[in-house]
Length: 242
Image 1 (tube, rainbow, N blue to C red):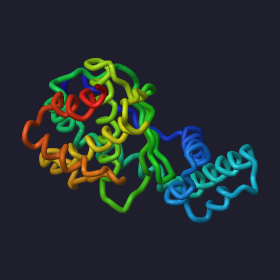
Image 2 (image 1 turned 30 degrees about the vertical axis):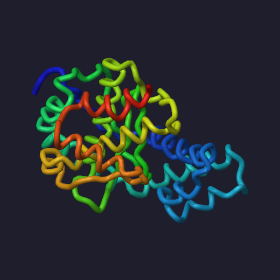
Image 3 (image 1 turned 180 degrees about the vertical axis):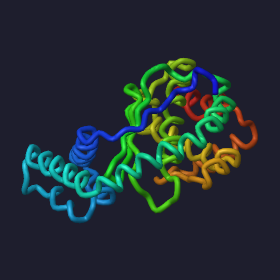
Image 4 (image 1 turned 120 degrees about the vertical axis):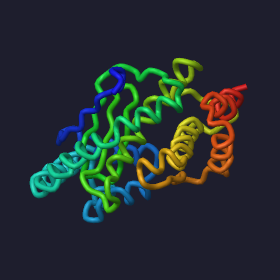
């Protein structure tokens, strides 16, 4: 394997997962997305979303709940971590070679890439810190591979954008919604995940999980015709800035 490919460290860290839960709890308060949090929080924890608790009390409930699950499901979580490491080792070399072709051998940004196992149903990423979360179990076999590959695709996509076009994930596009760039990055991921070489490696295709206004199908057509990352970026991001 090329020596510039990142070695991803998959870990268990209860404190990080506490913060993961708290972060999503705070997200629903800031973004008014309580309905979304209900989809990802277990039903027996929905009571914490009420206004009967202070912010500090809610965070304490999340912390205690997380610790309890890690204690009660230790064997399952440890097995999930072991399986995730083994499954990723089986695909990582082929994955990185595929990404090389998509991004024209753009070097991966240096740093410590860390994935943290999670009890929650949401797997955020932190681009600058090169941190992401993945599930300890899922009904889809080897689903952790899909999550790891998805988040790593975001890392190199935004690094490519920043280095080549001076655009980062917080850049706003004139005349577009504030979350336009985030949506484009997710749609791009879905396009690549539906591309046959990628979907064969990870055993399944993907499509956007939000209303994309038809962008996915158009971008998918663009990719199938050209298979050219700069054309995609120019059409859907750079020209949109003008």
